[in-house]
Length: 70
Figure 1 (cartoon, one colour):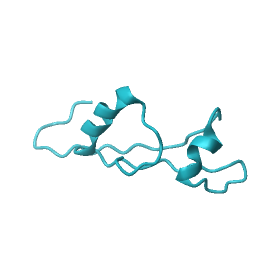
Figure 2 (cartoon, rainbow, N blue to C red; figure 1 turned 180 degrees about the vertical axis):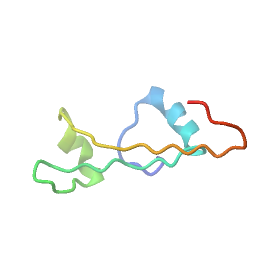
Figure 3 (cartoon, rainbow, N blue to C red; figure 1 turned 90 degrees about the horizontal axis):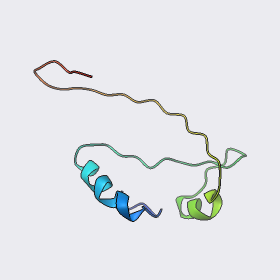
């Protein structure tokens, strides 16, 4: 997160900093309409006002001696 070139809204910074020690946070790559990777330095100029579609899968692992309650 600290090396991201994108701007983080001020009220989010503290929450994001809290996640660094407990989560593996990865930058979400962005592609243009021709499936060409957009350089992270161009995110702000290329994606401003864009409607995006995101596909992802979540995997949660609970490593503990007791039962996980979800």
